Amino acid sequence: MRTAWRRWALMMIVVAAVVAAASPAAAAELEKKSWEVGAYLVGSNYANGSTISDTFAWGVRGGFIGTPRHEVEFTFELQSADHATKGSDVTYDITKWTINYVYNTKVKKPESKLIPLLLFGAGTMSYDGGGESESTTILQAGGGVRVLFTKKFGMRFDAKIWHFRGDGEVIPSDSYFAFDMTVGVSYLFGGGA
Image 1 (cartoon, rainbow, N blue to C red):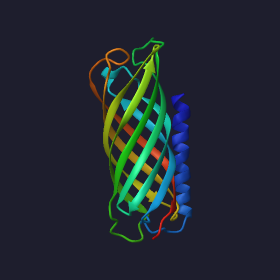
Image 2: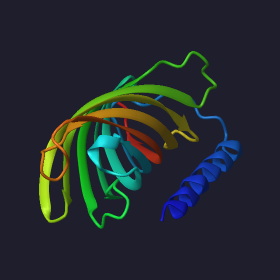
Image 3: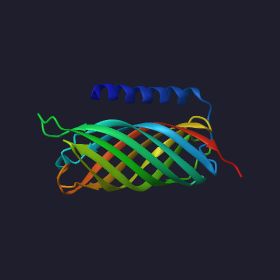
Image 4: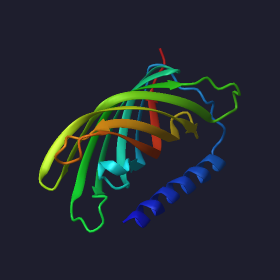
């Protein structure tokens, strides 16, 4: 299963490199009052004590870009992860919803296709395993880079660290951190005025 996810991630990176090399230069500037929608592959690395094994999953995002620097974004992810204890038959089904503030930094070179970004957010993680279900609040922070191939199409690479708490029944009761790496595509539309 993990080998298949790695193949998909590698394929997405190769496609991005080919499109970037073949596309004309796009100004690395987002339009005010525009929208961004996209899908991404996420690799999650959970704290060892949480009993959740590292896993890959898909997610979707949508956001409103109020000004070229400021964006509010909503994300949704579905994951399935094994129990970290070898030989356990418990599988976790995980759903994450977050709302993020994204700060797109100003690019100094006008011919650059890259827009570095910072993000901060909060949301919920619902999980079930072994017949029990619970949810927890998550807080996250991270950064990344947006690569624009055209004014409407691009890719995003993000890294986030986030915090959650176990409930004591499904996941041991403690405070945990997890680390996510994402690669995805973005479509931008609207804008102006």
